[in-house]
Image (cartoon, rainbow, N blue to C red):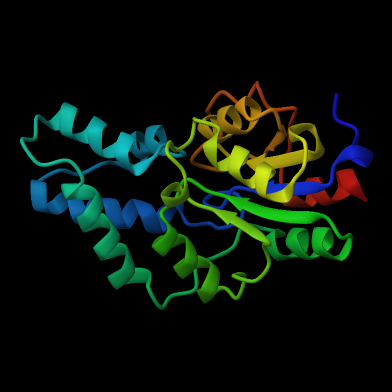
Length: 218
């Protein structure tokens, strides 16, 4: 059972946890898929929430029977994302800035552990003036395996020099929860409209919002 007095680091996921960015990713994926005469509807896209770009592309290739080189869709999606959202401030989830400020003011170590690519992650952070909020940022480009593998969390925990049970991950998807728990960290899940039907039973707690996270520590 989690004891808040033992927690020294808060490790945030990015998309869907701090940023309301799934809609932007959804648009970018579908713009890229137009080249291949494919469209993913909103309900189908919820199956991809929290999955790595490689997993999404592989599933799309298999289901559509495409004969293309791996990373063809991913590279196009990245290019389109930068063109469409490169200078745009991505909307934050409710209480995102308040939560980050709360834990910084309380002198917790703050990490960002995301399955996103470095370029897209820093576009989102810099455009929202949050790029200096985290002392450790680990992206999919920094580790051998993406979520649900624990690599991003293990890397952050190691860089902080802490034990896994001194860290609390904050996630929004089943894939993210699996990654955090596999790393030995505690994990609170805050589902959103894209992940609310996923299995989050492995989380130590399921909260309604980041405000509940603040209240737990307050």
